[in-house]
Picture 1 (tube, rainbow, N blue to C red):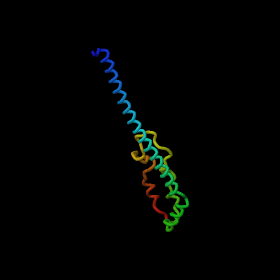
Picture 2: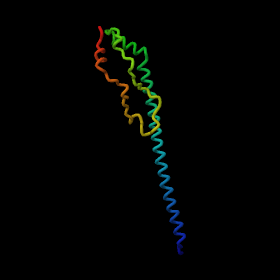
Picture 3: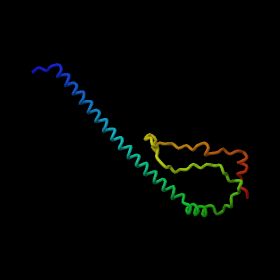
Picture 4: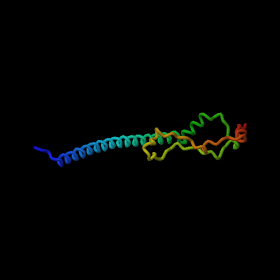
Amino acid sequence: MKIKGPTIVIYGIALVAATALILTSQKVQESERELRGLQAARIEAQDNLRLLNAEWAYLTRPSRIEELATAHLAGFGPTATANIRDNYDFPTPVISELPSSPSLMPQQANYAAPQSAVPAATADETASAEVVE
């Protein structure tokens, strides 16, 4: 039996198509595995975020802070009004949602306080910061 040229071409095209199908299938399966891993990491990060928010709420409840203040600040007197700063912005540690980019997972992100959150003390503020007795 003699194999003709068009038959060889058809077999070659079929072989190339089968190889492309297998490679594409493997890439899809690999992408699905990666997607499942990212979804698991996202769920874990959300659980950690819920846990941290609950812990923050527990640690900052007013009754606890009042107990700690009474226990540790008993020897201090009232604060002089000259020592109180009105323009200081405290950064809040509570995060309301996760970043949308998978490359910025919470364990990889670095938090740097904004420069406005840490004001520089001037000579007048340093002098007025002394405790008034």
